[in-house]
Image (tube, helix red, strand yellow):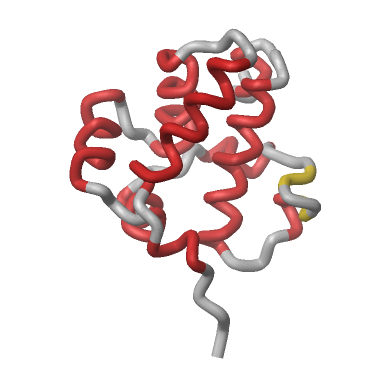
Length: 116
């Protein structure tokens, strides 16, 4: 039996303010964060707001998402683990999002964060 991670059943609305605080501390904007989320998931700001208001879990959020075909270009380490080496598909998607937020907060140009 595989372990079910606590994050899978957490609401995206619980984590979103943490992402926002992280990027804003580094001089980035809510609009940039939302653009990164839209690039990864396909959720435009109105759809993202709906998911936040409905307190959608990460599992349901990524189940409904249309993952960007270039998401596989996201590489690097998050929480000590290489995102490209994560076996669990849902955990990998969550870590993709974490990695993009980290890159945004570290001042990487938005075009590079979005793998343009």
